[in-house]
Length: 127
Image 1: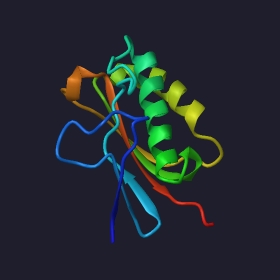
Image 2 (image 1 turned 30 degrees about the vertical axis):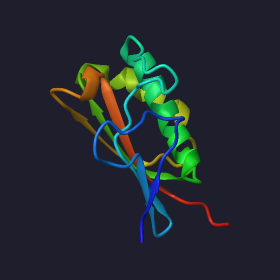
Image 3 (image 1 turned 180 degrees about the vertical axis):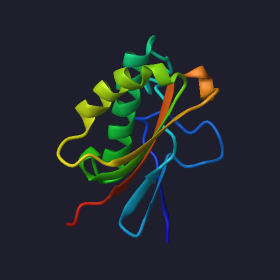
Image 4 (image 1 turned 120 degrees about the vertical axis):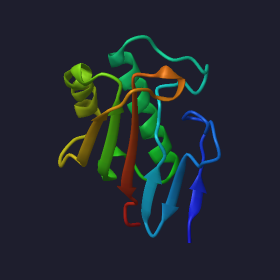
C-alpha cells in the first residue's frame, strides 16, 4: 500500500511523479530542488540554493508526518564537486545526532539548471 504525499510548502512536481510516497512506515522523497515554493524563484549561489533545497526537504518531510531527524539515507546531486564543502556546511545544519547515510554525485545538469538536488528516505516516528 502506498500513499502519495503533497504539500504547497515545497516545490510542486514538474512531471508525472509524486513529491513523496509513504509506504510501510517509510517516506521516500523525489528529488527536491531549490525552488522557493511561494515565488517559484531560484536563489543565487550554491549556499543559498542548498539552504532552500534542505528547507524544502524539511517541509516535505513534515507534510509526510516525519522530520529531518528521522532521515536514514540521502542522495545529493551536485553540479560542481568543488561545491561539496559549502553544501556540507548547510547539510550539517539540518541533520543532528546520527547523520543519515549519504551518497553525493556530481551530475552534468539538473532540472531548471539548479546547482543541487536532494532526495531522502525517512522513517515515520512511532506514535
